[in-house]
Image 1 (cartoon, one colour):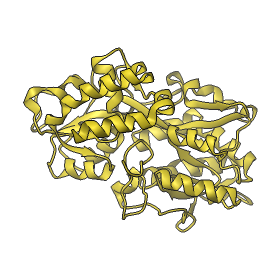
Image 2 (cartoon, helix red, strand yellow):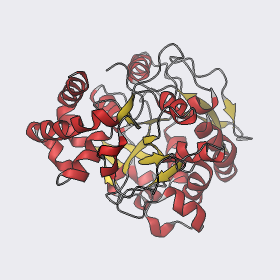
Image 3 (cartoon, helix red, strand yellow):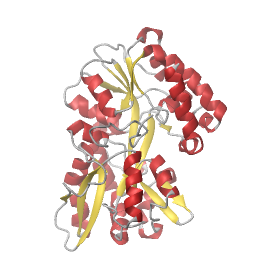
Length: 371
């Protein structure tokens, strides 16, 4: 299936392994050449922290709106850098870390890369006592190991249905619209066996994503997904491919990231974001610290700040991304809340299924597409 990007898609080749917000702005970085183009977040005295995050709008919003507040509060300068995506980046980071040459002190990792990094001894465990605001975060966004806290939730993202409202009327209310007989050759759907179509199908036609914990459940889910083939014009693996297809009208809608779709809408695209009654699929990235980094105190202070309501409110308003701390701690206006929260309970990505059965999920999905 090629090199996966941070959320189970396929990172584009030939452009460097760039994050999805890098695709939106044409930004990004290749390999581990991250230090070039670093930008500070103001003062900071003698203390500093190198922080990498997904490129483009995402890194820009953090650098302009959030890191300066952290520096003001702690006198720690943030050197911000765009982060590549994909398994190749993780493998390079593992090797650099072994050599004691990690290019950043903190990075954002998707759950599958948190697991891979833990297995390779890449991540340093945090001292939870040094992160008192960790109590603001639900346990589902905290990765714990026998050595301590290995990863702390940074930001979430929704996979939702997106449609062209000039073509798709009335507005759909259910994921079942993807299977509707009248939608032949209409959609762009996530075309990777590690992606969200498993959760979409399991929640819509079965008892939920827990079925993916068994091989029989995976195969039953794939059999139902085969019914999408006639309606799918594009099985996308690169986020940029789907973005282009939405912008040029190649597809009438499909499955995409809600925050990116909101950015496209703000740019004038004929697009609407639909939260199906079964719920959007939610996934998230976590703050991880390579063990070769020596900035442990600074990392604890940074993560503690990022878990404050102030920082999480800014993530929601500036990035159109769902904040991860407990909802009662947030103060969002109605417009922002409508963009970053779901009116129905989101469908959680089944990380345990991917830990146990990733190879089978990818294999069965690939065979379904090829048959």
